[in-house]
Length: 535
Image (cartoon, rainbow, N blue to C red):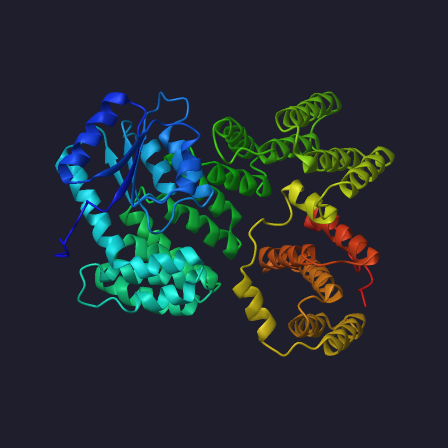
């Protein structure tokens, strides 16, 4: 163990434990270790306010499955609300050592886990390690808490290579570099450490750096090795699903997420990801199960929201497309019931009514009842205009459909890489777009694609060029069997980019037309041009 002197007298410990006997036992253990400042409290929702308002060196959080508010709920919400300060050490103590609970706790990243009951020696071992680490990283943690990540990185560089915690510090530095959108530096640093010790946490960070650098094949290889060596390393499965999605293999991403949710089923974000990917791959029964599970889990989670209800209603909409008339009526009634339940459960959610109207509008549009669909669309626009923060209705309609544009967003670094390849020049961007139109009209599609790519490089906000490129890739996917999936992925990518822009009315119409085309079978698209390119 690190030879630094360990003192307890100046440490402030928060002990959260619902069992009075266990709480008294742990207080006695802490007294034996020399801890003077102890604040013992029971598990309740008000504890989060205490954690937010006061500073503690160590938080000992107990979990008992029979509690109305459990320790794991508090842990999850503390992480969700960013109450877990870097300078505070967290030890999660659980009487339920089942795989589900342990893996769900790991999702919230406490420093250590302890299974109750435990000995004073076991407690001392964890607290000693935390005190040593926090002493070593004092300047780093304080910089992180200030939001000064640059100085936090510099503080990491002050730790001697001979220090026993050097590898941990280098992982910390790698994580900070990723947060600073410097994945190349992080990758170089982390790979050097990984070759020496093959630590699984370092391996995870390497995969994150590879994904940030848009190298999904390398990330897949890295993560497959990790999951083979560490079958219960569920965060590796989460990243592996992202890598497969980036690579365009949604079926494989879905299967990886199914495995992840089998091993660790209590996390709502993971269930929602499975539902999203399963919807895109038309495994509707899998998606339905994931969204229903999210609703149940949300009853006692900080992740409770209307989103799984909306996604489940969309599943019913998709099921109606292939159903007979009687079944359509049954599914439509269920869709309405789901949305009504959502509004009953979230009466104060201003945006929920808008999103519900959008789903109902699309449902009637699918049924060929255009007048009804248009009426609901106008009602959604009216309600949306009254919101404190109005939604982008085009974007919401596409995202709610769950079957066109992936939710994964490009990182700001990726956007910066696109922007910085060439100098920004709006006039030249427009010129390249016009040149692309001329090539397209002459039947020179490949040259048109090149010009449109250059137009976007000169101006990443050129909505006309972005939508034109989406159209060209869709036509190429229709006309040529080889690389069809890759080209469809590009269509989705450029439509996703268009969602972030302020579009003219003509551009909005074109965007919706392309979305509608993408919903159809690729072989059923018109054989000619899918529309006049935008200038």
